[in-house]
Length: 241
Image (cartoon, rainbow, N blue to C red; front, top):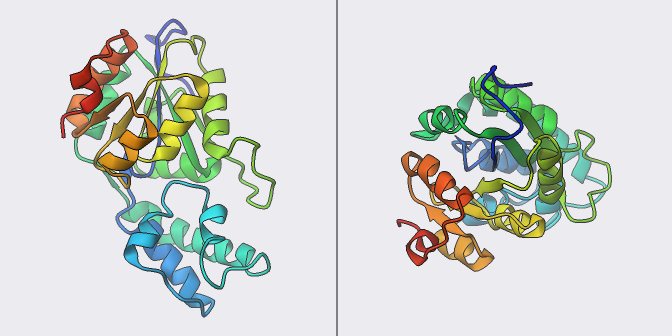
């Protein structure tokens, strides 16, 4: 999957998370997990705890819940994925300003998805939301959710694949809404932008060491350009929230 003829490997790259950064799941993830747990006669955690499951690999999050065992985990994941494919993708909503931000950024950047979501689901979600044409590559976790996790985690692995997909990985930045995105950027030595409209809050993103915070998608293109240009001032690091 490539951009138009204006794309070159000399362009800097912007790596982007998916759920909570580009697309609001609108309860599809948390509601789907709750329904899958109920379907197996398991207790449903608080809304706050469910929100905390958005970001890390689904299996790892589910393992922290009461009643989830290695025996019932595959069936819970299967039921959740089935419900998500049937209802969740279409129910998800693109965050305000994201489409314009992507259109702006892709004029002079390579845009790449780096998500913990299984890669086939990420591709399908972007296609359903008609965002897939913006990206030179879509990188995610293994579609086989029974496979062992990568040594450094799925986000770091997805970012490794994303950087390999661009010709100039030395000029790249990561954008996401959870500390997993910021941690992955730090692992790869990249600056990072924590967005404040998703599932992580300012304290989480600041504690993780985000280079900058972004309160509105309208501000994202300029912020990316400033960071990729080497600007690191206190106001930038403080974000605009």
